[in-house]
Image (cartoon, rainbow, N blue to C red):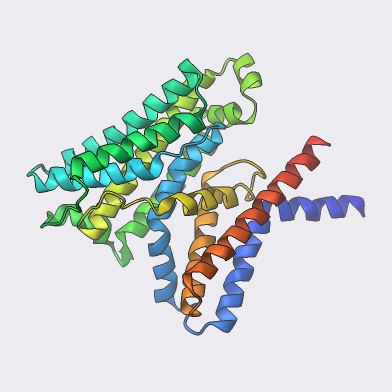
Length: 319
C-alpha cells in the first residue's frame, strides 16, 4: 500500500504539471466557446513561440545552477541591431550572424566573470543587462526603427513552413534540439552534473567552469535569436521590444522544473511551462478577464509550483 502511494506520488511529481495543463485545457474547453478550435490552438502556439525560444536559452543557465537577468535587454539590443544593420543596407544573413555574435559575447563575458572572477551570476548579469539596456538606447537614440525590410528576413517571423507558421516551426525545432542536447550529448550531461553537484562533478573530472560559460553563452545566443525573430515578426524594432519576456520566461522555466525531473530545469518542461502561460493568457482573454487577473493567476501558479518543487526536494533529501 505504501509502495502504491509512493508510485502515485512519484507520478504526480513527474507529470503533475502536464496533468494541470490538461485540466486547464478541459476547463477552458467546457466554459469558453471556440477555445478548442484548430485556429485558436495554433494561435496559442504562435503566441508562445518567442517566449519559448528565449525561455529555452534561459533554461540552459539554470541547468548549470546559474541565473541570467540580462536576457531581455540582450534580446532588445540584438533586435534593434538587426533592424539598424538591415535598414543600413546589410544583407539579412550577416546581420543576423552579427546579432547572434553579440548575444554570445554577452554570455561569454558573463560566464568568465562568474567562473574566473567569482562574481555571482545574479550580480554579473544584472550589471550586463544594464549595460545592454544602455547600449540599445545609445544605438537607437531612444527611437523605434521602421522601414522596408527584405522579404527573406520577414519570412523568418511571418512566413510559413507548409501550413504551419514559421515561428511555430522554429519554436518546436528549438525545443527538440535543446532536449536532445541536454539529454543525449556528453556536454548536456556534464551541464546537468555541474548544476546538480558542482563539487562532485569537478572530482569526477568535469570542467565545470567551461560548462557554465557554455551554458551562459547559449543563454545569450537564445536571447539574441529571440530579438532577431521579434524584429522579423514586427518588421520594426524599439529599445524595449523584449522587456516583457522577463517574468513570463521566469515563470515558464520555474513551472518546467516541476516536469520530468523535479527541481531541475529541462527544455521539455520549459516548453510545458510556456504552454501553460499561453493557455492561461488565451483562455482568460477569450473569457474577457482583465489583464491583471492573468498576472495574479500566473503568480499564484508560480508560487504553487515553486512550493511543490521545494517540498519534493526536501522529501528526497530526507530520504
